[in-house]
Image 1 (cartoon, rainbow, N blue to C red):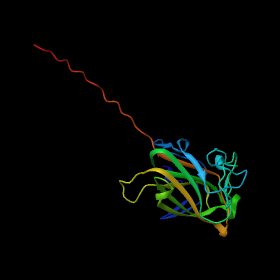
Image 2: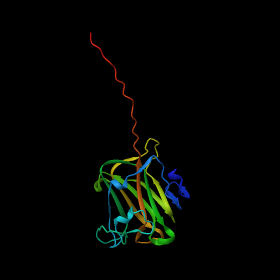
Image 3: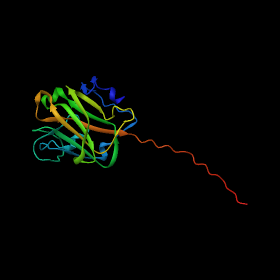
Length: 199
């Protein structure tokens, strides 16, 4: 199960990470249907590396004006830094997966993040806050609520905000972000034709 991958997990706190990305068959990647943006970035470290499936590249958010770059994203300056995931229609989301590398990025590694959802920037609501303790590897953040009936978030927009970094770092690095929703199951019921006769 995807949510069992973190080494240590308490309420609101995750320690470690998983070396390999393991996703259950009932999840599908939703990030490919989204428009991604960042609050800011350094040139050469753009939004495209968020989902490029290359763990050697990273995004870095910065205090400079918004940019879309071809390779990497870096971030500097005042926090919170944010990554925005916007969809054309309302989608169901269940899981956010981050690849972070504390051993490589040290003070650039997020230590506290907030996940927010809404129709747009004007009405984002915080749905989860997590503290990350020296994360190295894939970190799984469930969007399910405390109520067992709340298995997903139905939203047009998801925002991942970095509230603080390890060692009080200002810049933020992240290697990958994946967003998953439930896989749609389509069942075909047999159609029975009834013959009618008239007299």
